[in-house]
Length: 312
Ligand SMILES: NC(=O)c1ccc[n+]([C@@H]2O[C@H](COP(=O)([O-])OP(=O)(O)OC[C@H]3O[C@@H](n4cnc5c(N)ncnc54)[C@H](OP(=O)(O)O)[C@@H]3O)[C@@H](O)[C@H]2O)c1
Image (cartoon, rainbow, N blue to C red; front, side, top):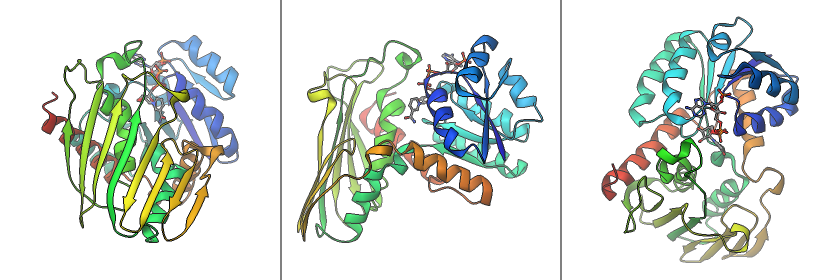
């Protein structure tokens, strides 16, 4: 049994806690907040225990693991404190401020003999798994172009997100997607549309993949949504193409065969598969599919996109 405490009682903490009910034979949940009344309310609503402060959860002998679900600039410090206290760690995305922050975290995890997982659910999206399979089976032949349209409207000014770049805060999901198609990323370059707003709210990232394919990710929080945010993306190869609703509602293969797929409406975002994998990883001591190396690579790609686009 893993006794998991959420550090921070916000939106994603509640969503994850509710999803973890499916694993109640293996995981119990608790809640820690800067305001003890909030932790109590979460414990009441979601089921579980509450802690008066983050410190109380970190110091508790009744906690085996913490999920750090606070704004990103607090993640590194909380992860290091948790590992020093002998807890496993789940880090929400974006996992840390800088890719280099993974070095002290990996060292602390090794010293403590504890696991650190990054909750990058896009790694578990049924859409990604379907497309990766179609590409691996060669159903559109040699891949030429990957066009991912992840343009939407998100009010980034309302909460702590106001001070973070959109590609770093939200687009990192799609960076992970672009980097996990089974096509090795050789290089990326960022492009920022002008006139620019600060912090960055729209970015294009071009990809060069090993062996020749090229790709482009368009990511924005600035464009009012059409058709409830439905967007189309496309991968072109010499023997056909794959068209997909960007979030993964459906996939149309037109290549060596023609098929329409509904990859997984029940777990569109991949959270269910992610937690199942994390629970398994705690039980076996093995690394989950979303590895720390992949999480670090994703962040390095964001940093490279910003550096080449001149975003500081
Ligand atoms: N994987 C996904 O799909 C997904 C979706 C949404 C968010 N996220 C990530 O999850 C993390 C939390 O996001 P969220 O949407 O849950 O945010 P949120 O609703 O604002 O909750 C964040 C919580 O962090 C705590 N906190 C600690 N220091 C804070 C500060 N300086 N300002 C504001 N809150 C602070 C607060 O809890 P207490 O007051 O109780 O301590 C707050 O409720 C972020 O890293 C975000 O990128 C991931």
